[in-house]
Image 1 (tube, rainbow, N blue to C red):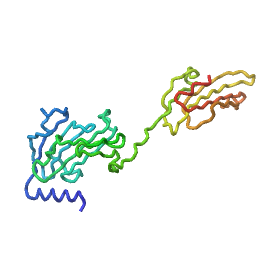
Image 2 (spheres, one colour):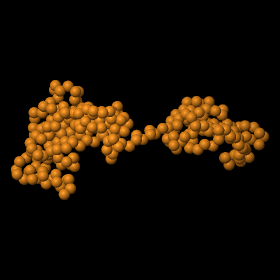
Image 3 (tube, rainbow, N blue to C red):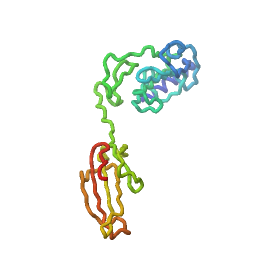
Image 4 (cartoon, rainbow, N blue to C red):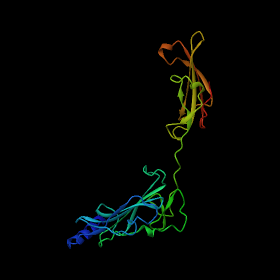
Length: 265
């Protein structure tokens, strides 16, 4: 018998006897660590009678291991954990509502064994007795044990923290639309990461008439996915059909440090 059917059969057996569950009922969204005025955490007084298809639930939200909100009451069976155990979902640096939080933990405790069984208290939080390695694990204050950030692994066999994504920063401009590109030095982050765009590049193309007169100079600076040359120049035919009798002289410079493509003016 799978877990969901087991929960349903136990719960329906309880209801079949004509006994509707009563659960502690309260909500506190602004816990500041002071027990005064925050009875929802450990001194609950209000109860509520559930419907025939509900069980009792306690839900805690912890920010970096410390409680910040709690809700107790009747709730519908929705695949929480096995009755009487605590299930916690952890998000690491992924919650837009709490951008300064390293670990946001949401814990559920559900039960249907007796009335007011959802009385688990955050005053029983257990600090970890050992230092949990930063980056790959965190302390679960409900169990007092270190837990891997990656749910599929068990402490202490946590996988190494993945390397952060890095980006090259290059001067980016086009002389066709920016007259100041020839002497621009301010760099900005490339759109691709350092794996796809590891280089910075500068090109300068001069258009030369048959009478060997330079009529246009265009400088372009930007990010590059391949290394062309540290410095290379070459002649070619005019790229525009209207300039087929003209010659273009192009110089290319490629480099691989942030903001390095300021040469060729």
